[in-house]
Length: 79
Image (cartoon, rainbow, N blue to C red; front, side):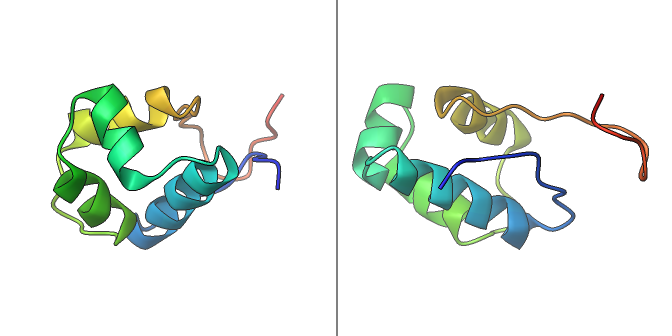
């Protein structure tokens, strides 16, 4: 599975994307938490779509997994 541009509009959708990338990379939740200096509980809650997780930590996880956030107006091409 290769990660392409994905429109994410809910915490659950972001959670699924993060989990899919972690699994694609062959990493456990413990490994992700360890190399990012986060608790496993945070990674679990993030992957469950908990809407109250800290945004700064979410961005750390995304960066650690080689993902990024791009914000643009709806309907714009990814050019």
